Image (cartoon, rainbow, N blue to C red):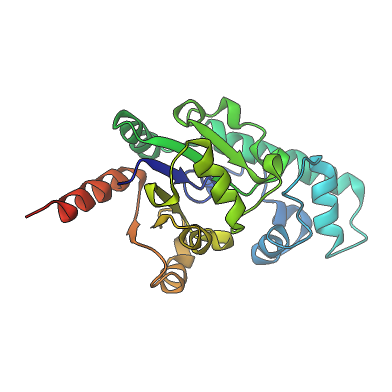
Length: 235
């Protein structure tokens, strides 16, 4: 029986990519990179997400791993605009139905745990997010020194709420092999496709046999859970 719902944050509950450009330009555009190039840097080993960091140091390390001569003034501009985008995404860009779905799950007495790979600045505004008070615990890689898909971060999450992994459902977009890791840790898994855009088909194909189901929104999570109860009910 599922008692705990573990949610990924970025590209699952919030979408930084759709924040209006009036809030801040895309970091890739500031540096003159293709968006895929910058995303690859962000998901590379150069991005320190397992210990507290300063935003400038993070961005300088990332861009200098690609282009060592980028000046500090441009890096500072990128830092400021990137921070504005992440802060806005967490505080003012939560879509209504995402919030509604989480509220409904909370009302059904599920314990909610956030499990996110993130550097310090990326989640700086979490405490001011309308989502934050709905979660019983938040597990950020930069705070706990562990990252998905390491089995220990999932263990940390379910031990926080004193349940077994089989009593947990992990919901995410599948980035960083988070669903593979959750399944290996003994959790049930759901692929959330809402913000996948052009990556949706590839992500679906990559998770065949890995996930227990697929949903488009947080509202559908409750529907999926209800269906599992029906399917498991004795005849």
